[in-house]
Length: 144
Image (cartoon, rainbow, N blue to C red; front, side, top):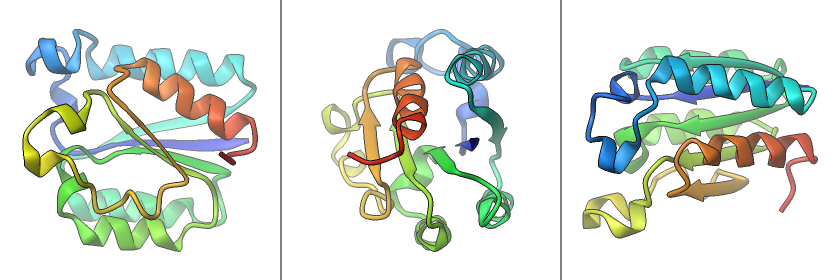
């Protein structure tokens, strides 16, 4: 199974950006862990990160017909980027929305995401472990 893991805006600053909220792993360390988990689950994983919305959307388009599942953490784009929501809506594979922090315990504007209705499954507030759960969900067939 082919799985695309997309990390969005500002996630390249992991390890530097408020570790009390986002943890101490850098993006590189997180991706290394994701690749390890994917291998253990028999998945072929590709991780990508961008601070450019158009590039992020292009990767979603590229996943169409090529990937068996998508794990997505758009960062702040989650709360307003309907263009990302519309791109994800085109996909016919399981989509797992992941947030490192518990967005429901943070600022009010973070409580809702524009992609929640196109995501097959959501994982919030579990740090890096949320990505592992997302990969497990996809490996088990991507149904709740």
